[in-house]
Every structure is written in structure tokens, then in C-alpha cells.
Image (cartoon, rainbow, N blue to C red; front, side, top):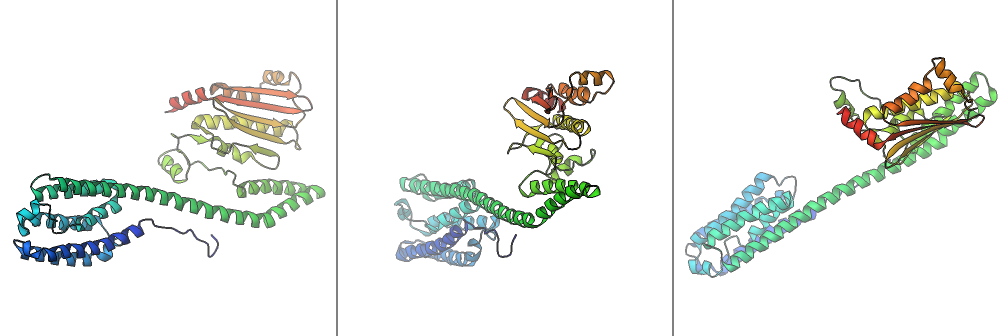
Length: 406
């Protein structure tokens, strides 16, 4: 990645944690203010004073950890909820019973909501549901039964915390998607920069070597041909083309090695494009869909082997100057691969003669393979106009073969 260019990661949770830390301080001061205004009504005011002393120390001591998602651990959340529940359950011991029955606030008052919201921000709506249920149970015990105002407050905390927890989960998923998109964008820009540099240097040199080699002839012509093939392969790479992935040796650990290399193992489908990509070169053009063409492993390899056999026939019989084209078509009911060349074509009756002489390249390497796959191989050749081989594997045969392999 170029210097000075980096993927900026954002955190949608950071403002929530900071707001939660501020809320806890304000809620603590509010609870203390309520206690001060109603101090004369307390039956045992020393219990309230002791609890508020603990609440102040706990709130201020945990402030840095509550403001940081990484430092706000499960243990801290559990202890925080315990402080809130203790305050709710201590209220009947400190306050007047008539005042409690009349809807008076608990000792922690709205500070309890901050503890529940911490669960929501940290763990999502499921954690929020657990914490708010515990608070609801404590409030019912404190009031001695379900009262209208108690149920109202409990439902309010319940709905608010679960809603906030759900929003946090959605925000996290959006953040991950955005971060991935930014990484892809940065990688794409870097790839484009490398492609420009390669195009301005390496590709032009290879193209010049190919042209000069063709003019000079002899060994220079062979060098030019190789340079042309490398130019095509490199151009395919920098433009986002596929590269073949070497398969690991079969045996113990082969599937794990394949997964580590990013390739499907023997139980998963193979992308036909990756198997045919190595054929692309100066004299072989490959046209492929933009999306993967998945096939069962054995089917993909047999189809790729048939394509290789067709290209071998082009090299042997169409002459050194012949060009070939491979077209991959992923249709709803079949996968079709067409191999076409611009050679002299096959004279009429030549295939039957070759089969009678025991040369079974087309009969076995191509048609035999497709027949075993449940497909077909159609060969059309016009003398002087080249040859076209169309290999078709129906999707129904592909699925049946995939089940047989498993």
C-alpha cells in the first residue's frame, strides 16, 4: 500500500461508550440528589448513606473502564449489575414502606438503567434482555408485587435496552462491511497503480522482444514467442485474471492444506475457470464468465482434461501458427466449453480412419470423457476454416456425479 495511504477504521461503539460513562455520572448525582431531598423520610438513613458512598466510589473508579469497550469485561459488567441490584434490594431496609408503596424511587434510581445499557452495548440485545430481566425481578421484590408504575418502568427499561442492543449489533455488522469495502477499495487502487507501472515498463519490453524476435527469426523467434506468452499471462494477472492454484498432494493433511491455500478441498466444488486459466497464452485466448463456474472435483478435472486433449490436437495437427479460442459458458442447465481453432480443419473421414488405426485421441480423450460424465462432445470441422469442439456437461449429470463422489 502506498505510503500515506491506509484504511481508516471507524468505531460506531466509541460514542456510545462515552455517552454511557457520562450518563452514569449524571445518574449517580441525580440519585444522591433524590436522597438528599427525601432524607427525612428514610427509616434507616445510614444504610442509604453507606450505599451512596459505595456507589460514588464504584462509579468513579470504573469510569475509565466503562468508557472503553475492550476494558469493559464481562466480570466488570456482572459486578456493576450486582451493585445496581443491591441498591434496589436495600431500598426497603432504608426507606419508609409507605413511600415505597406510593411509588418512591429506589436507592440507585435511574443509575440502574446505565448498568443495563452497558450490557446492551457490550453484548447486544440478548445480553440486554438478561440484565433487564434481573433488574425487573429485583424491582418486583422491592415493591412486594407488580404495581402499575413498577411494571411501567420495568417495561420501559426492557424495551429500551433490547432496542439499543439490537441497534448496536446492526451497527457492528455495518462497520465490518464498511471496513471490508475500504480494504477492497485500497487494494484495488494499489492493484491499479501496479498495473500502470507494469504496463509502462515490463509489458512494453515483452511486446518489443516479441516483435523483434519475429523479425530476426531463428532462436530469436522462439525467444519472442516465449516473451509473447509471458506478456499475455502478465496482462491477465494485472487485469484481475485467474491464476492456477497448485493442488496439494493427496493423503493425510491434503484437505487442510488445500483450505489453507484458499482452494476448495476434495469434498467441495472446483471453479472450472482456475483449471483452464493455465491454457491462456499468446496463441490461446480464454473467454470466461465473471462469476465462478463450480463443478464437482472429478467432473471439473475430467472436463479440463478433455479441453487439454483438444488443444493438444490443435498443436499437433493445425500447425505452429494456428490460434485457438476457449469459451466457457455457464448456462442454467449445463456447462458448455467450446474450443475453436483457425487451422486447416479435418478432412472428411479422417477421424474414422484414425480410430481404425488405433489413434483414439478424439474418441477416448474427448468423447469418452464426456460420455462418462453424462455429457456430449460435438466436433465440427470445415476444411480450410478450422475446427470447433463443443463440450457439454448437463447440470443434472453434474449433480448426480457430485452425489456419487460423496
